[in-house]
Length: 152
Figure 1 (tube, rainbow, N blue to C red):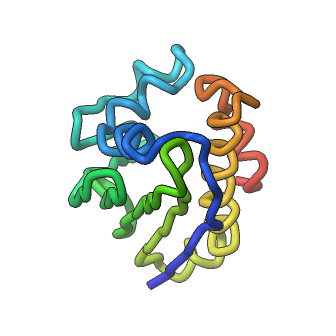
Figure 2 (figure 1 turned 60 degrees about the vertical axis):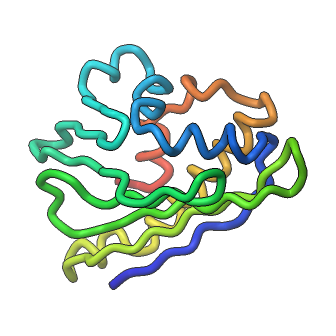
């Protein structure tokens, strides 16, 4: 099992607002560029998309209001994984946040992606922090730019 703990950042959002963003999978689609939204199907609990011929997705399997959301694989992912989002209020307007990724990676995938997964988890947190500070618009986050940063 590969376990990755992302860096902790203080996000300039109240814990209930940050929790709401993660507790409804439809929010992830709303923040995608319009040309990508049609490629993704979402409900409150699930998110699915076709990625390089695979039907990949995630499903929320656990929620603790204002502090925790856990998602696990859904669909044809080539490995089992879960992602946990942790939120801890600092004050009424700021929340300490980090992600954890746990994946049962086959050896070859682990060799190709192992170190890049840390970059992915940390970059997601950094982009969330930048968006909370008004430095970027969430819909301006470019998935292709993220792939390039990870070299995949």
